[in-house]
Amino acid sequence: MTRLMHGLLKARVKPYYLYQCDPILGSAHFRTPVQKGLEMIQGLRGHTSGYAVPSYVIDAPGGGGKIPLLPEYVVGRDGNDLVLRNYQGLLFRYPDTLGVTQEPAT
Picture 1 (cartoon, rainbow, N blue to C red):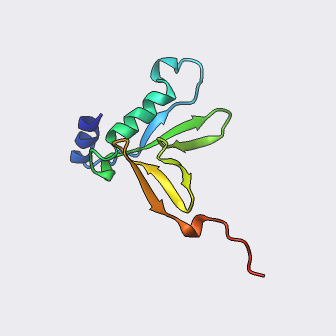
Picture 2: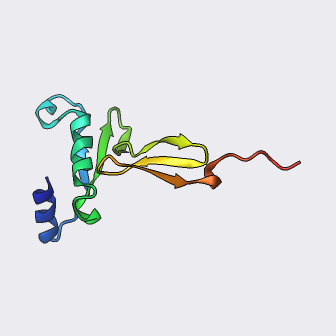
């Protein structure tokens, strides 16, 4: 996948979408499990230029449009810290005191 994305960039084509197609009759052979698409995006992030990482989108059935999907990078919160997972699976804490709801002053 990385070679493909780099080849597109060399041809001056920005990889825009990794597309999970609408589940319509006759398209099943083009679809892979969504988890595989997420793994492909995660395999690109951190290992190549951001220009070479397309948006992974699902074309929602029934005219719902394209919905972007991302691998899960926000693990949760610990007090005022946001706990994040990077492309290598390592955890990091980010101080996010502004993200914590504060009680109004009385």
